[in-house]
Length: 570
Image 1 (cartoon, rainbow, N blue to C red):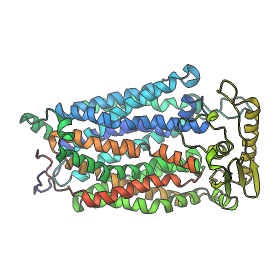
Image 2 (image 1 turned 60 degrees about the vertical axis):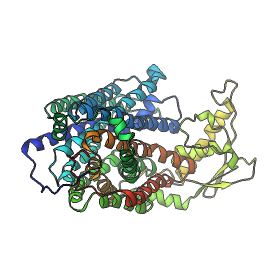
Image 3 (image 1 turned 180 degrees about the horizontal axis):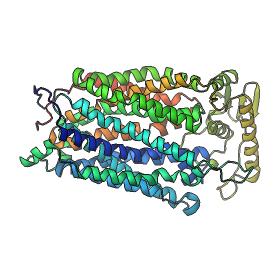
Image 4 (image 1 turned 90 degrees about the vertical axis):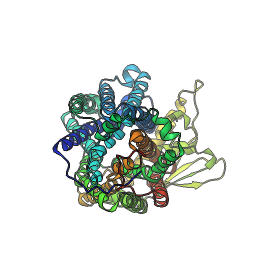
């Protein structure tokens, strides 16, 4: 693709209006998508009520991940349409599909009402959302880049990058406000667990509100004009008749798609999801910070960090996209194992002290231990003494170390100086429940473990009085800054890597495989890794390895693109 020596020109008022409209519409679309991720714990109870808490949460994350898994297919479907019939109408359709699916989630009956149909319909809606989002980003990024003046593509496409964070921020604010307005307790006095109006029905409000956002977004997008690059290409009769075969059937283009995936978007994605989604999960589950405080801290870090999307996007117009994106990947890979322990220490110092003072070990025959992070496991699948012991600790997010024991040994948990023997459970003849004796024994065992952990401070909630909120915020801002480094320039670089006639299709696939699979599966994978090993930091190996691999591959094989003429069709 040719480079251009055209000097940067100011963007016209009409072009600014079009780009603003595109960015605003995308904010709403990301808001829709992030609602589910932020409410995963509530959704686990509503739609996966037939499972134990750990399995329900993993299934809820998998349902969330289902939307990410189908994103590349959405990229193929809508990318093809975008290259054949135009950018504007294609990503107008995507927002209608996604907004409608989100609204329906707010109306969907729970597992307690319609049984197994509830999670099945939920997953189907999540997949519709994923398909729509698969066509959304490529359309928005391509649309904005093709309106931007030469020399300012990084600055203008960075506005699209802020929309993901702003959408998440908007969803958090709506959830917090709704939670406050529906915080009343509806369970009977003395009944545990306590059920609030938010847990019962209030969680539906943010989904239902999205219909208003959808209406505004559709109105805005109907007023937009077609991209000048596509309009020019269409007028000249040069649009692609088979964008899929051109993009992926010709090696000269396919190799660029592959390099864009493993040398750019895979690392960008894991840094993005670690810095925002996994950080929120870590605060709430591992550091045991209450939901409201954790969300407010994340929201504050987003407010502080979001302008840096524009900073790094603009900087990439001057020094290039490659050093900024790959620099962010490298810094992330080098610092995560330092930053997250700091986050835990600043958020809940009492918990860190307890973990040092009361070490926990599980002594068991390794042959009797199953994979605790299995997303398809049921409570009755864990019958060995090792599995019951580890499951109990995992459900309470108590970290532990493993000690191998001779074959046939009954597993035990040691907390400090106290040792609690586990048990092998038996099932009834129908194999759909523990036997009454085993059920009682397991309940007694879990009660003993939880009481001992509580006495040792291993389940201590974060205390506002001892939490170092300024330092927690500083760590979260650092994580968001890494996100802005890898994400700010990525849209411009992906657009510049492919010719106009197949740009929508070609850039969408690596972006959505990277962000949908490598990034979207990160919360589920990292949680499963923590559950499987007992090490609360073990899940960080996933983003560290992917980010490091992207840095190496990107440095060796990715070429700088900032001076490319994106109107060229070669």
